[in-house]
Length: 358
Image (cartoon, rainbow, N blue to C red; front, side, top):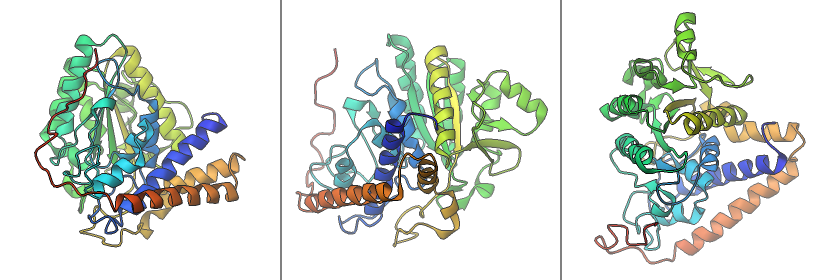
């Protein structure tokens, strides 16, 4: 396996927490709000949060997220109650005091830039944050920009690619490619085989690889090699291969390469992961919030459980105990949150009022 046993168990616990949170958020009629998918089948993204230099200020990493980025925040150490409080519109919601849509995060003390309702604007926020980091930081920090594949159709994405390439900014652009944008299949919404392909014109290092041998050699000339054993999946349109986002070891190794490359060179990197949407986009398309039968074989949590059992790190009984304990703890907290005061003030706390780092 890719790490020691305590680390592997910690990764599994965080992934399990994400899945259990999603199950609660997918039924937030208990909390009084419709759901958006926060993580289902993208739980391996906790590895990104765990690799970040978490903190506040110029010498820590920055996260420019969107509403599917829940696993990254869990990896960074954000408490699960924060997500449920926002879903319940609680006045104690640390992200928005109960006034923003569920999974629209913000945490100044962790350098998490506010998630906007407009998608892809995190691309502009991200390269701007990285520009400030390059100008003023004394540490090898980076900005992580998380995007979905359909969001890359926005001009914000292409502008970001140009800016981070021309200015050599420390940006890790992570693209979760589940081959769909809300209800639109990838084949009807994007011209490129995968979204990493757009980085060719800017020579941005990437984890993805073309199938054409000459193009593959070109990409390899400016991209660090990934370790052997990293698994790839075909791009939604023929012509490229992208890292299998359902295989935790593959995500771990590609993540390590990406972080090391940026911290050592200060240059940008495109990490695209082939994922699946475990649930429908939101309660408007599937009120039950149940996991889709058609993609169960690509469940990263189930695959990782099997790997841990095969390696003798966890047994069936240990996994069952962990699952029941996590769910019981979350449900107890959800019951408490249900009785918290709902936010009625739309105007206070619009701007950060805490102390700024020296």
